[in-house]
Image 1 (tube, one colour):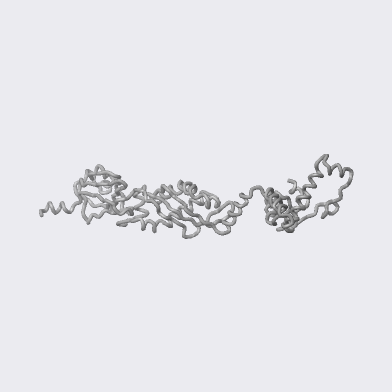
Image 2: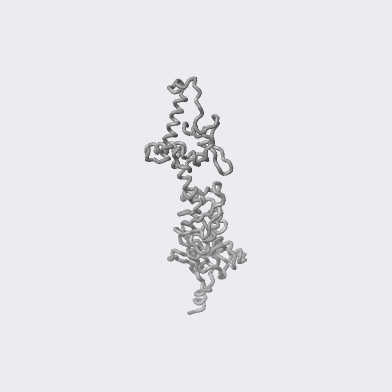
Length: 356
């Protein structure tokens, strides 16, 4: 072997790399401590970018294609090397292949609950997990902030390094979006799409990454919030509480004597309501019969003044559960006054409720 053959063997003439691993994010091309010759061929395949790094400083970036390395197409490296009139001698530089394809089906999850402020429930703790797709859009920032000088940076290393960072970005985006906890727990697909415009700018600026898809597969809330969500959905299914109470009364009447005290109370309440409606009809039979006669006060009143009843008494009279009476009071369908923690309902309000 002659001297020229030996020198030629110590120079790099072709730089290329084929990825057959499917889990590589970046790869530092092995130069075996050789130098790159002037006019060397650089081959960059689809879904690859090549980043030159000289003494820790980022040089030129190449997309897919075939290049002949001269001062014309490595201007940054030429400036870093201090070549004024072009280079003739070989040079050394680190060459990183960065994979730019989309990496799909990556799992994410919150190891600790995410705290968020909700307008309905106050401070709520959420746990969430799902999948995401990502790709590298800024090789320089990715190499600097994520991969570093790793010889062969793989997907499993990325998952370990980025899991907590991605959850932090997700938590910040969820907090700034001010999405109600009810929506977070029920509208997974819409929420994932809504969070992408908040997540991607942060990922690009910090890590040189972008997410084409971010999917929430499950969001769990504390038991007390689950109970509140169930209660609200139940109330929505019931609809008009006034109609619901009347329906319960009708059911009690249908049972007749077998309905127990509740059924008897329901029958009495409906009978009294019907009688009062007949009396109030102008020109009706009862109105003609009682014309000119003073009707004595109804039982349970003193001097015609309204008697106050508690929710249990109202429930017994209406033939419904006490919880239904409380719900009607809270909704304002049944008029009453809350004194401390106790409700008091005028008998006239109960009669008005039956006639509504």
